[in-house]
Length: 375
Image (cartoon, rainbow, N blue to C red; front, side, top):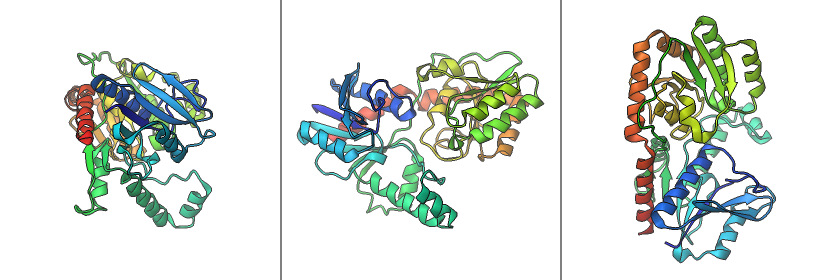
């Protein structure tokens, strides 16, 4: 195969000046390296932009298509058709959210997890539907759209089993004609578990400060824990629309702190913490935050929502609890007061990701999928 093309809303900023940060961006950068190392070519990453641009990196080439700064997969696809022949090109939709039905190119959809188990009321029409009692209709439309875009290609990669199991409940075995592969997300693994010592217990919430990622649970939980235990520190690492509320909390107590870290240094950052919290209130894919925390030998307490349940075996390598403040209070308190349980979670969590979620395993599975689709 001569050309590999990945389509995404953006890898670089719309003006092409800087690379953006996010789970999907990290994923696609890693996938580009897999393509480069195993097939000997640099993938082209097409994205929306405010102006046309081209940037060549070590393992990929980014082409921004002038869509006036708006996501426009159709216009981006037209730009690809002008330059590339279907005979020697594999098309990879970086997220099925932006995929289009087409039979010209061999193509793969990447499905990054169920993101529609909560109501995303960020537009007036969605708010109106939910507030008027038509949540059932809104959710029906969400699910219909999820199925239709997932089926835009003849092959797909899911990052967790949650979506595939859900998809099967809507389609009979005869209707599922596409090739569906499950390749869980990955993390780098240190050579040996980071040592954890000392009486002070440091807890981290390393997520975006948005409601869906559980910041509204983390804020009162932090206040409760530092008031209850003198040996507990609680750190918030991230940014987002609720940053002011987190800042106000950090200013109110000396053992509640705010920090940030580079995504490439996540393992080193987490190495300093005993417990990591992932209190998402809605599903996501195989959570990178959760995997990185476990690889760093943190004991994890996570919500029992999709994506987490593919990683954590409750009470073995971490805890799965409902996404409520009271549930997280009870479980984190239990870990603080039971050091044996804390160490058991840390040890088993590290073993889990080393065996099942390593980057080398993820790379090997992607190579196999690409070769299968090309045949």
